[in-house]
Image (cartoon, rainbow over all chains, first blue to last red):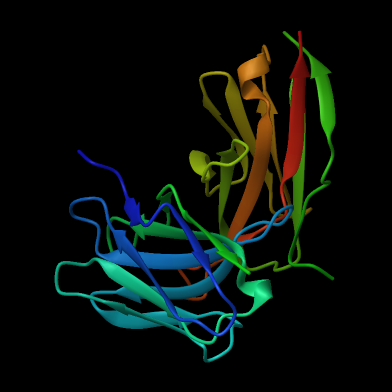
Length: 113
Length: 112
């Protein structure tokens, strides 16, 4: 079975622009979480969706938004990019509503110039 | 006080030795604990989960949980250079949350 996939792999944007990142979960996984990881830090939680409903939101500004589609794939959108948004963006999926184990995709490296 | 604390390292051990990685957490209600391995430039990979006090072994890896003292550790036996990576501890509370909090990770270097 294919693992979690994310696209694009790398992205370079300019301050003020908008970006959309995509994630496809492991087949059968219905929950998707988004994390931001900057160098030297652990992943910071942004959003979690289960069955297309938002189940949690981290301490990120409203410039960050996400959604989950009927096929359980997900998008993370970031508006008005700042230099500080440069990071590795990770998507993680979970198999069942009561499962705690999360499996990460390869990530999207976003550079804002 | 940070919720999940790890020594950033680096922890340097010789090949064949036991590497011991530690993690403490502040929320006494935490129930689920995870160790992830992250190679440089890659995403985290789940290697162990533990939910009950005591030890859990999987191959060369042993996770140890002590809820009374609020710490969880990961032992890597017969360390190999390929084990060189950052090890992330993640903790999840029991209060209906499926969102783990990650530590900043400990860098492990296994030298030949």
